[in-house]
Every structure is written in C-alpha cells, then in structure tokens.
Image (cartoon, rainbow, N blue to C red; front, side):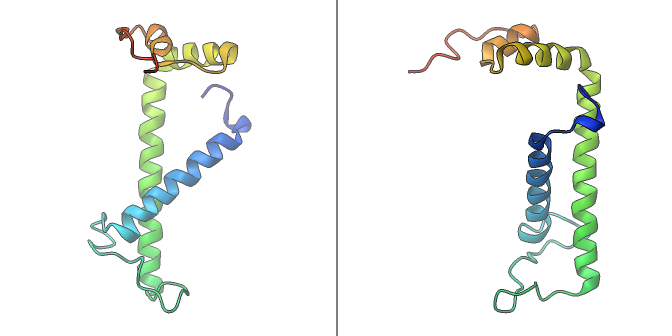
Length: 121
C-alpha cells in the first residue's frame, strides 16, 4: 500500500511464510478446520516420509490453508485501507527514524500516551 505491489520486500515475504505456517498448523496440527476435520493430520507419517493421507485430503488441507491466508490478507488490507492516513503517517516517521517506541506510535496515531510505558525497569 505504501510502495506498491512491485516493491514487496523480503520482510513481506517472511510475513507470508509465517502466516502460511500458522495456517498449516491450524489445519494440520490443531484440527481447527471444519472442512479438513477437527483432527490432527500432522502426525500421520510413515517413518518420517510424507503424511499417510490421501491426495484428496491433502487437497482439502491445501485449500483450507489457502482460504485462511487469503482471508487474513483481505482482512489486513481492509484495515490498512480504512486507516490509510495513519499508515502513511507511521511510514513517514519510520523512514525518518527507523524505530519507534510505543508512545511515539501513540502520538502519531493520536492515541492516549501511557506514562512510563516505554521505560525499562
């Protein structure tokens, strides 16, 4: 949203990798999918090889991971578009300073400052 689709950074790539891994764990390990079933598919392995599940089930799992990541992306983009002014303000400040503490972010977003929130003890 700041620099356009042609300027996606390696940081964004890492975010996509992590989001995909979380969605895979949700479906394969934690049984958090009504479409793939409320079961763990992760430990259905034969001596460390591919999971002993059918191609059909693998397709369902892959589709669920894709659906979850697509939904998460759409939700995040919607929030960023709705708060685009704040997004650009934060981006400008980060380009200038590189790092911001919590109260600096609150100031930019016009949120209440928390006394002593950023002091180390």
